[in-house]
Image 1 (tube, helix red, strand yellow):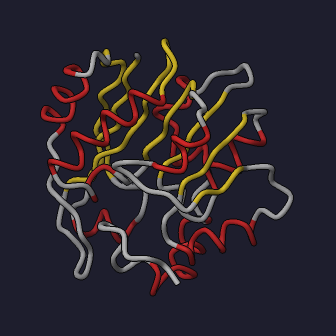
Image 2 (cartoon, rainbow, N blue to C red; image 1 turned 45 degrees about the vertical axis):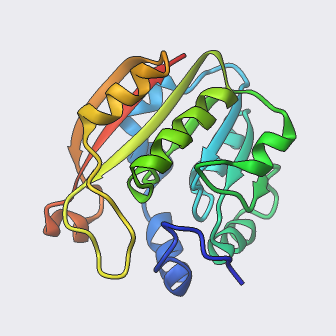
Length: 203
């Protein structure tokens, strides 16, 4: 049973449907704007809010060492079922502290936060940015997406501004590499007017 983590509301109940829906969109199709930022050499990658594992499995298949964090038990279980041969390390952990990841004492070349940041309130985002910077190697890259638009019923989300996120990152000595806005790849989200901003920063 999932321990309630702020921001996970509404995901456990619909985990299988969400997982099957997300699997219809390929890793490359979803992440086209940021693919050039993924290292070609084998690297250590942290996937925070990894959901049903599509991205973590794809990154591992590219030769990377991947730690995938997912606090919703049902989604994490679906991921391990969908990708049974994967060597991805799965952790029941969450921002803003990432306590289990910290205990591993690993540093990462890339930290990915796909559809995660809007689940954290302002204080959690400040602490979360501290955590991410502590886990990021010098020269490492943070890649994140920000959701803009109506908040679905039963979900804990916040209207997180692009400018505010950039200021927070720069205050942590992260340099902006990418700022791209696009429509959602999911038709239901597009119908609601949901858009996304992709941001990337270098330490």
